[in-house]
Image 1 (cartoon, one colour):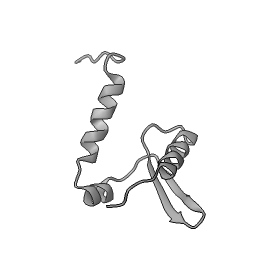
Image 2 (cartoon, helix red, strand yellow; image 1 turned 120 degrees about the vertical axis):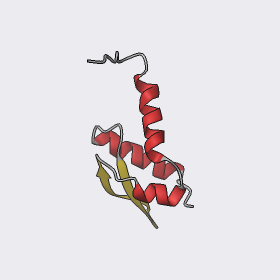
Image 3 (cartoon, one colour; image 1 turned 90 degrees about the vertical axis):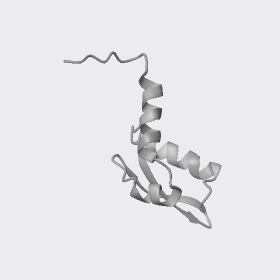
Image 4 (cartoon, one colour; image 1 turned 45 degrees about the horizontal axis):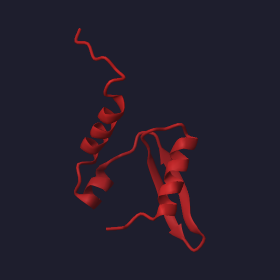
Length: 78
C-alpha cells in the first residue's frame, strides 16, 4: 500500500478547495520535484480506492457527511 505524505495530502486538499469541492477525487504523481497534480474530479470513482485498500470508501464518505450535517439539517418525510 502507498503511504500518502504530508506534502501530497496538503496538495490534494488545496486542489479540492481551489475547485470549491468538499468531496473530490484528486490524482497526483510523485516526481523528483515533489508531488504533481494531474486532475481533480468532482464525482470520483471509488473502484480503484476500494480495490487498493479493501475499505468501504463510500461508507466512510457517508459517515463523514453525516458528522458534518448532523444538527444542521432537519430531515422530513413527505
